[in-house]
Length: 353
Image 1 (spheres, rainbow, N blue to C red):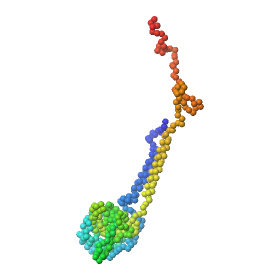
Image 2: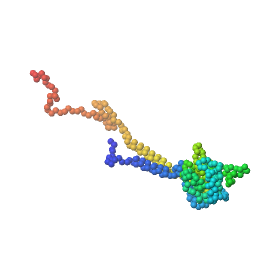
Image 3: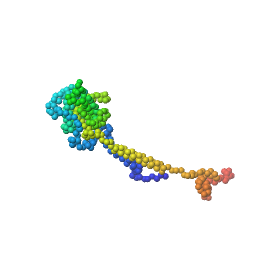
Image 4: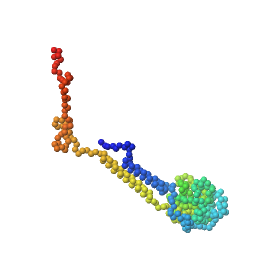
């Protein structure tokens, strides 16, 4: 019979269950740390990638200097008369409608303001805490304001400006091309900004499905209506200014991929494999311990002789053993017999006689 251990204080925890509990806690801890890492959600687009280490020296203005930057002489928003002239023309601008030809007059005026200053100087005077909702709800308040944005560029398009009959650009600045960048900021996802610049960084590629980060600083013109890829009509802030790559000129748009996630994944898989092997070996060992093998020789029934018996092999004489037992003996007589116990020796007629 299997022995059972008395446990007056309740069922105790076996070694297998304790190991499973520790394993579960380890897996939960690893998943918690992994899911708490912002790099895990980088592919979703809701987390902003940290700037490279080179960007930590951004306090020095020389590190943000854009090489071969186009700068032309002319008035800008530092001139009060120029600002007053811009405000007088704002009646030509209508928000939340497509860009109209009459609004191109202010478009090129803001482009001139941006081209007369370097990116470094524009960043010093720009507003750095303006979010998408503020511009959307109060566009008239920010028209002509200098705003700094960190944009995740999803699309970069190059446009050639219109030309005169003699082949010269028709715009007052003589620009032959401009670059339009479309993308969201961290607070604007999934809504986008449209920013236009006279030139682009060399590290920024043209095309769709990009994932580059740029720092833009420029002047807000209006909320522009446009057709999205899904066919719906949406609105986006339109700004005109300059841009640079995140971290300074020539900085990489992405950090090198980290192998930390793979290390955690392999560690979790290794723990699961070891636990499975341990559980399987424990199960096999328990099954072997509970299974009782049959004896090498089985008892045989022997019906020969006077009575049935069981022959157990392996003895010297190999004689059958009668397990039936002796016949029961008659009870002993105590000298007196009742009439029921003794046979009748006389007939009833003898007594009558």
